[in-house]
Structures are given as C-alpha cells and as structure tokens.
Length: 98
Image (cartoon, rainbow, N blue to C red; front, side, top):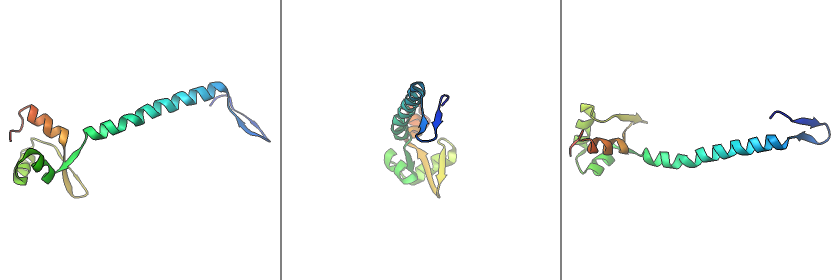
C-alpha cells in the first residue's frame, strides 16, 4: 500500500485507492480459489484396485499396463496411483483396450 500514514494515537490510515486495490486483489484470489475444486475433481487418482474395478479387469492387467508404460503411475506413501483422466484419455485414444 502506497499511501499509508500513521497517527501515533489512532493507528494506520489507508487511502480509498489502497482499499480499492486490495478489494480487487481479494476478488482475483477468490476467483482462483473457487476454481480449485473443479481442478481437483478432474485429477482424481485411483489405486491399482480402483483402476481395475473402473476398467472391469484384474489388478494383474493393471500391473501389465503399468509395466508396459502405457499409463503413468505415481507412488504416494507406498501406494501406486494413476489419474482417472489418464485412463479415460488412453481408452478414448485406443492406447489401452480392455
């Protein structure tokens, strides 16, 4: 904030322009935060078992897909995970056929 002044007895004073700029900044932050749940929903991760249930196949088939490198898996806290959106895209592109 550019134009703040301090009065020893009453604290800090902020100009109307500063308040307006602050309000605009908060509005931009709020818009970004409100978009987060949509992004998280798109990035649902599945375990090997959940991926097998989603594709109606065995966990061994999921392991073969992983070993072949057709899908990218991530290990978090010892659990192997794959993005559900990646599975859907691979199915649509014909990369994997179940």
